[in-house]
Amino acid sequence: MRADINRREGVVSLVPETFEDLWHAYKLITPGALVKSHSTRKYKPAGSNREERISVNVTLQVEKCELHKDSNRLRVMGKIIEIKPAEIAPLGSHHTVDVEIGEQVKVKKEWKDFELDLIREAVKSSRRSVVSIVLIDYDYALFAALKQYGVDFGLELENKAGKKDKNVETGKFFSEVAGEIGKMEGTVIVGGPGFAKDNLYTYLKNEMPEVAKRVKVVSASNNEKSGVYELLKSEEMHRIMEEEQMHTVFRDLERFLKSVGKGDGLAAYGKKELEKAAQNGAIEVLVVLDVNVRSDEFYERLLDFVKARGGEIRIVPEESQVAEQVKAFGGAIAMLRYRMQ
Image 1 (spheres, rainbow, N blue to C red):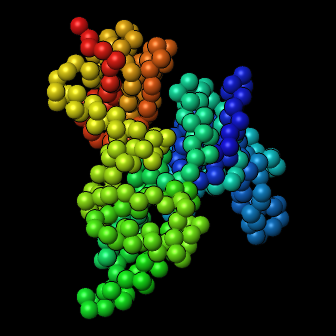
Image 2: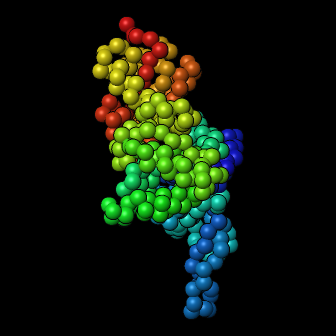
């Protein structure tokens, strides 16, 4: 994500560079905001029977946004506030702007502090390596990627060789898996039960040494989706991925659940408990669903309290894997520095 923040004028210029960036823009372009972008619109010149598609610069008052994962674009729908050339469409008519990767969009609204923090974090995150996960045994490989919005499961490859041919055909299977790993950017975590992960790594060192430099081998009890979540909670993965936000949130949730289970007084949830802990500076880490912050001013005030007293804040997408568990505790949980009386 590239971004330029003009706080005085309330204008943020965004250039999404990945699908995750489009997702961030989707969260930030809220109804009522003004969006300015380049677009096209059908237009029938006077005296002509044919419609033409004309290039326009348009400003919309946003009514709705839709994120299209398959086509890597964000559709912003609303009423035209300004359009150039002016004769292409009347003001107040409806239009849709397609925001795609690499295209600039300017957003004007009353920005909340947490939204600007999200933009800064998105810019910071875009400089980090993408972390991908491959879980493998001699029969099957599962590919996944850790995204800003959670775990994104992708390709599944099967070793189609029969049992008699498995030893001979494993080289072909490893070649296919290695080819997919070669397409990935950044760090790739390879794990799974048994020795397949180690042998794949040896194959990579021999056949694709530059790719092998980006590969970390870890242990996992299985090569299924549950194995990915298991890895995210492991100390081994923590050492590799300590900078990754979603991994941090998984660990925060584990810590919170253990504290609640033990009843040690170092966890808080529910508005009354959270408010008391925040006002006393007791919150070390606050995890809150983004939808709560947007829909309830209580949580916006809570963020200000926690930030002012040096606490850490994790704003979690409601689409993420941890969201349901956080939602079960009211949509916000906290880990405390000390027990409250």
